[in-house]
Image (cartoon, rainbow, N blue to C red; front, side, top):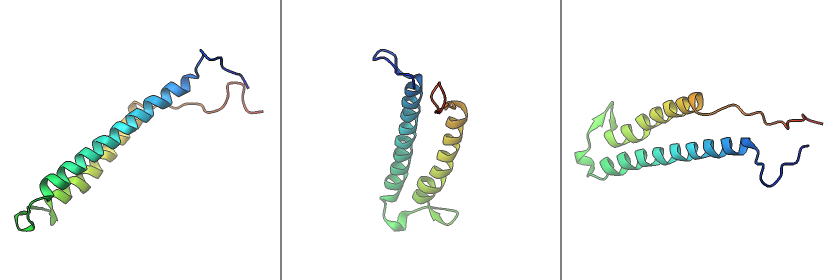
Length: 94
């Protein structure tokens, strides 16, 4: 196993950190989306709710549309910004 000096950092850490930050950004976006619709539209009295496909609008946009948007965003991010990293040591497994 090759030992890295204090100045030489494995480039896989940089990739992993970048991808973790992207994932964190997606989580924050998902929470803001959900919270905005759920509490923004859902804080009215029930008598004032509007409905989409039989669901209250706040639920439809926060949970159903939000899930679809997040699935599409995750697919795009994984396909275009995440990279495949070899997790084995450079010398191979002994």
